[in-house]
Length: 499
Image 1 (tube, rainbow, N blue to C red):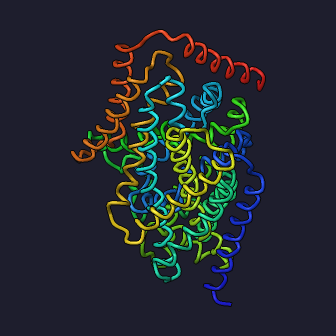
Image 2: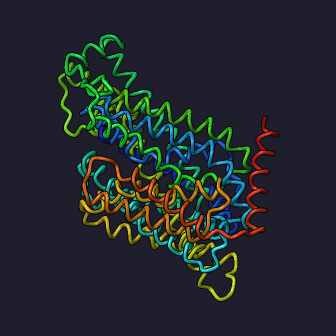
């Protein structure tokens, strides 16, 4: 058989496995809360790996190794920032949000948590949050479909549209029927595939080059500055701003709905401890693998004379040169896994925003449980169709908006989540004002075009505005205070039990 045949067989096995997991999740899902949040019974390992896989997307397998290959270790600051941000997210937000979202009227979405926690009887905060989720995530999903089409176009010389529709169809099939559980369990398999690929490929390349010492010598021969986290230059103001901007990506974690919703689905607040350990182990191994792959690629292609077209394909190209074509096919599948894991998670969050945060508010009578599940699946399909239509003719505006969305969510939702969980005096008006101020700042800063990443001013402006307005509008509310204390005591109690 040809190499291409082996690779297609590997992808077929991968697709079949994802659909099988989706079918299993479908059989386990019987009600609306189960479809949207896995019945708040997600095991620690599933929450940890699914949060990581849905977070990293194709950036982990392609973007980060490519950036390291081109610019060197100066690009690793973003990995450091993400690691710190993810750890703090698991440590601070996960147990508290799991407890508080259940205590506060069993909120199963981020917008509904904002409304219930802050007793926003106008529903404006919930509606605005849901709209933000829908707008950003529809484009986010579309970009994932674009990435899938480009992947098949570059890897298999297939038509872009055929590849995009294949990725969209398979992802939709297991998400549509499997719901949150299907997305989470497939994320687990996809996360393991990504980590294994990022460990195996650079190790084999180092062995091919004669070992770590010879590999480092070869990198220095190409460019000594590649091994410097300051790009080999004295620390200037421009370099400092660049480092701060890269590390500031970690701030975005606190406001990413498709990540923090995993915290709400944990079995109990104490499960966040083991989930944090599993998730951070996966993340650190995967990020080290991605950074190493980019560095080793510099030496490998210089020493072997092999050609590398697009730097972002450094992991894929090395896998095809170093591995049996069937195994290389599974590395290709790992890249697809990175793309598809993010799409599935975002589809579920969009569906929950439509059903839980918009439809249920507009409905005059409470919908039947079976109706809610049907609506949930219908909304997944609707968002996927809109995203696919946007992806038919990919444009820079979509891809640019995706890079911008991380800052948008982080600056809009991040401070609100932290203040909801740790400051009892936050008000609905303060939270809404902060969200608007943060989002406007991100847009304005991006339009201004400075070197500082827009999440930094957006996050800080949101925080300041939310605190100032809340202090001006705060009124004692015994019910809110009681919930705040109950959530805190539940976390403390679970933590002592776990210890």
